[in-house]
Amino acid sequence: MRQSRIIIWMLLGLMLLVVLPTASAQEFGTNWTATFFNTPDLSGPVVATQVGLPGINFNWGTGSPVPGAVNVDEFSARFTSTQQFADGTYEFIVTSDDGVRMFIDGVLVIDEFVPRPLTTNTFSFALTAGSHSLTVEYFENIDEASVSVQWFLSGTGTVPEGAVPVGGGEPVQAGLTAQVDGARVSGLALRTGPYLGATIIGVVTPGNTYNVLARNNDEGVFTWYLLDAGGRQGWSSGRFLQLTGDENIVPEQGSVFDTLDNPPDTGVTVRPRAVMNLRRRPSVRTQRIGSVPWGATVPLLGRTVQGGNFWLLVRYEGQVGWIFAPFVDVPRNLDAVPVY
Image 1 (cartoon, rainbow, N blue to C red):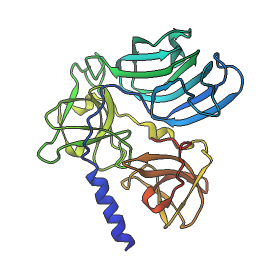
Image 2 (tube, rainbow, N blue to C red; image 1 turned 90 degrees about the horizontal axis):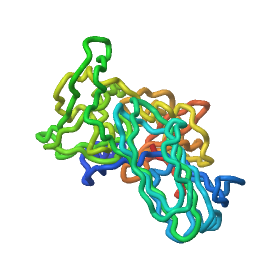
Image 3 (cartoon, helix red, strand yellow; image 1 turned 135 degrees about the vertical axis):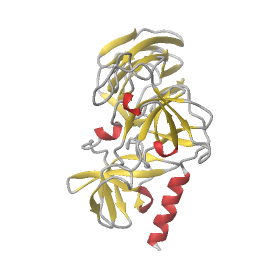
Image 4 (cartoon, rainbow, N blue to C red; image 1 turned 135 degrees about the horizontal axis):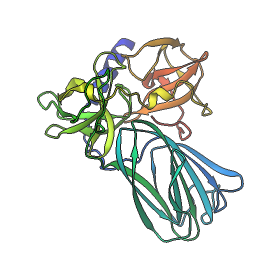
C-alpha cells in the first residue's frame, strides 16, 4: 500500500512538468524577510517580523501591514533578501507611497526616503552571475501605504562580451538558446532550482526561444538550464529542451539551495508518518544522507511548494536535508517557514 502511494505521488510530480499559467515579465524575487517598526525612521524596537515573503508587492491602503502590531500610519519597514542573478544589466522598477530607498550589495541605488504620493522610480544596474544582497527600506507617513520592487533582465546577451568558456578556450561572441521539445511536452516547468522538487514559478512553452544563462548537473541524470523566460529566471530540465549553440559558453552555476545547509530555526516542527529518506536536495535523484524515523519531531527550516507543500527542509541529529512532504504531518500556520 505504501509503495503504491509513493508511485502515485511520483507520477503526480512528473505531471507537474506541464503547468498552465504563463511566466510573469518581471521578477519579484523569493524568500524576503521584513522587519517592521512603529516609527517612520526604522528606529526603536522591531514590532513584527515576516519571513519567506515571495516578493515586495504590497498595497496596504489605509490599513496596517500586521494588524495589532504595526501602526496604520508613521511606520517603517526593512526588507532583506539574497537573490540569484545571471550576468547582465537589469532594469529595476520601484514604486512607493511614501518613502523608499534601496541597496544592492550595500550600494545605495535609490534614495527617496521622503513623504511623497505614489511614485515610480526606475534604474539600470549591472550584475555578475551569482548571489547578490538586496535591501529595501520603506516608510509610511499618512493615508495610503504601498511599496513594490520588481526587476527584469534588459541586457541583450546572456554571456558577457569576451567571456571565456568553462575550461578555457577562445572568448565567445554568441549565447546559447533553448526551445521546448513540443513533440514531447506542451509546456515545461520553470523552477527555483535545478531539482524535480524545487518550487514551480512559471512555464516555458514550445514555439518560443529562451536565452540560457547557466547550467547545473547536480541531480546527476539530466543537465538543468537556467532560462530567461521574458525576464523571469528559472531552471528547466534539459530532458525536454532543444539547445542551439555550445553549452560550454554558459557557466556552471549553483542555486539558492546551495545556501541552505545550515539555515536558522523557524520555531516550527513537523512529524513524519513513515520512515523518511533524508536527501541532500529536494529530489529523489540526489544523495540520500540519512533517514528520519516515523514519529520523530524535527525542526522545519524551509519548504518547496507545488500546489501545496512538496519537500520539507528539516534538521535531524545534526544533519540538514530534505524529506517528501506528503508523508509528513505539517502544521497549518507556516508563515514563519520560507519557501524556496
